[in-house]
Structure formats: C-alpha cells, structure tokens
Amino acid sequence: MKLFVSEIVHDKEILDTVFEAAQGAIEASKKYGIENVINGAFGTYFDETGKLLTFDTVYRAFDKVDDIQKAKYASSIMGPPEFQAAVKDWLFGGIDEDITCDIIATPGGTGALSSTIKNTLTRGQTVIHPDIGWGPYTTIAKEQGVKIQNYTLFDGDRFNVDSFKETCQTVMDEQGKVVVFVNDPCQNPTGYTMSDDEWTAVLESVKEISEKGPFIFVHDIAYIDFNKRGEAYKKHFQRYTEMPENVLTVITFSASKTLTAYGMRVGAQVLISSNEEQRIKMKHACGNTARGVWSTVNNGGMRLFADIALNKDTKEVYMKEKETFIKLLRDRANIFVKEADEVGLPIYPYHEGFFVTLKIEDPILKNALHLKLKTLNIFFVNVYGGLRVAICSIPLDKVKGLAQRVYDAYSELNEDDAASDLEKLEAELA
Image (cartoon, rainbow, N blue to C red; front, side):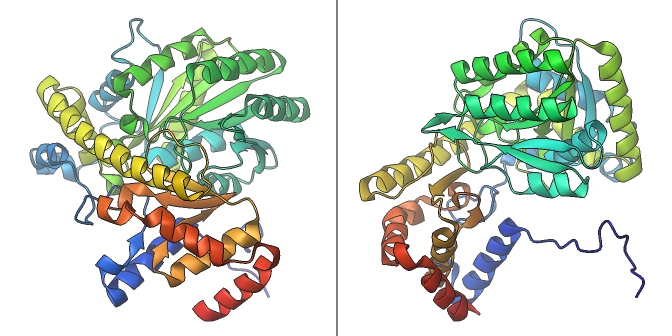
C-alpha cells in the first residue's frame, strides 16, 4: 500500500506528556470537583483561585492596541522595528556596552529553538541536550531529523560541567560542529539556576572546544523574567560578546511567558557573534525559515510587547505586578521543598521558577508512582529521571501537605517489585 505521508514521517506520533497529564487533570476536575484535584501538570501560572494568571498590566495595555494592529500582518518577516528594539532593550538595556546582535521574531520560544536546529544542523547530525530537560527539545530534534546526545545535568547538587564539556568534545570530534542547549535560569523541569562560577566554567569549555570547529551555544531563557535576581541576571549576556569568532550564541526568548500571554506565541531568536559574516548568514537563513514556515508572528502580540517594554511608566507597573507573583512562586516552592525535605521525599536541586522535580531514577518505579498519584487525583508530568511538579499551577492551600501525600503514595509502592505495582495500576486505570 502506498503511503499518504512521506517515508520519513510515516511512523510519527504526537505523544506529549504535558498535555496528557494536563488533560487528565481537567477531566478529573470535572468529575470530582476542582477542589479535590491537584493539578501539578500545567506549565502555565495559575493564581490562588485556580484560574490562569493574566497580568492586569499586560491585558489593559493590550486593550489599547489598535484593532488594525491586532488584525494586520507584521511589517517585517523578522519582526517590526519597534519589536526588535523592545527585545534588545529588554534583554540588554541594563548592560553598559551596546551589544551587536540580530533579532528574528518567532512564534514563542519554541519557534526560536526549532529554527535554530533547522538552520545549524543537517539530517543525521547531532544536537546536545541536558538529560533532564524540557520534553519538546526531543520533539524538535526529531522533527528536523537530527540525533540527540545528552549531557548529564547534575553532579550531586551542582551543574555537571565535566559532562557538558566531555559531551560537547565528543560531538565536536565526530561531526566538526557543536549545537548545545542550556536552559537557565529557572530550568525546566528542575528549577535549577546556574551560579556565576558554573557559567564561567561552561563558557571556558565552549571557548576551548570552539578552537576545533563552529560552536552554536543555545541559551534558552524561557523563564528569565521569573528569576529572583531580576534584571541583574541579564548582566550575564555581556559574556557572549567576549566569545571567539567560532562561537555563535543564540538566545531564545519567550515574550509569551514573560507577558503571561502563552497563546499569543511571541518570541525571538537573538544572534550574537563576533563573526559578523557568519552571523548575518544565520540571520538570513532564519528569516527564510520564518517566511517558509510561519510567515509572520502575531503582530498584536509584538505591538503589545513593544508598548510595555519601551514605555518606562508601563514597564515599571508591569515589573511591580510581576514581583508579586515571583514572591508567590517562592512561597509555594518554599513550602513544598521544606516539607519534601522533612518527610524524605527526594527532589533535584531547586533554586527558583515554575517547577520542582521529584528524583526517581528507576523508570519502572517512577511510572508506577505517576499512575498511583493519578488514582489520588494528583497529576504531575512524567519526565526523564522523575516527575515534574508544576508549583506554578498549585495554590498555596493545596501545596501544604502535598509532599507528605506524595511520600505516602511512594512508600506504598514495592521498590523490589515495582513492575508488579505498575501492571496493577495500569489495569486499574485502563
């Protein structure tokens, strides 16, 4: 039988653990009442009433965006000038030296990541990801037909610089080029943020390895505007201007997350390199991808971001509102992490951000706990090495005591015969 789809894609399936868990939480809420369900699946911020959080500053500013601006195409494939200026000021406005960069508007941070892979690697080559990372990194790689090599994220409670370096060195030796992802700050799914010393070690290894060939360093900053250091974190970007010519840094920015406007799908690729010729080639390649894949990004969303970023008074109000919810995230996390420590529930090192991840390295035991929690109407996301707890979506009153409930469920499983528990739970939930 001839295939409708090409041979390359004929066996693809969309299996997204986040949406699967989220849908389970929605269905359970309808059946048992939202008050009886712990929805730790959604990767979006929910307020204390259980509703999707929308910053008042953002949506009142959006009300003022002219209907024509919302309806029309953007004036440029790369993003209109005011959007590009807004992104540059948002990321680099607090840095003393003007940073030379190219900016391409993308549909969210996902578009920026996908375009980067598409335009730096050919089918069959390898991209490097952290072993514990955002699941769609793998989807993006497979969509572009590239292989995946993982570096080990942690060495104890610290970023594993040695694994990062060794993995990059191996791939450079094999294919003469490195493309590697680092997600920081507020890493998804662990909530880890690298220290200055860790960053120094990572970038020193990038410099060293780039002597052998092109090194594309992809810095995924999806959650940058929810980190504890605030604008001070962005001083780090100065380091990218000091990298050698063989290094291209691609910052992937999600304005959608920054604005609590996830569905607007607004983001950007920001290209930094002292190799101007190659940087411009990358800019043109990404612009061509934009035209050929999504055409232009949501114009109303880009106009909104520019109106907030480039208006001092509006930005100040936004920053104050955002700080309130960064504190709320911190309060939720402090409760969960403290209680997890008290009851002996293992978690990966957490510093800040939307997610905490339970550390369960045995995949069978992890899968069994995932299903066991479902029977208790507790919904987390199954990730490599553990279960992701979205504290961003769990109100304070539901966070309290949650670690104990999870630990009790964990304790009921038989670690020596987790496969039997898993089989029984699968049958129960079938």
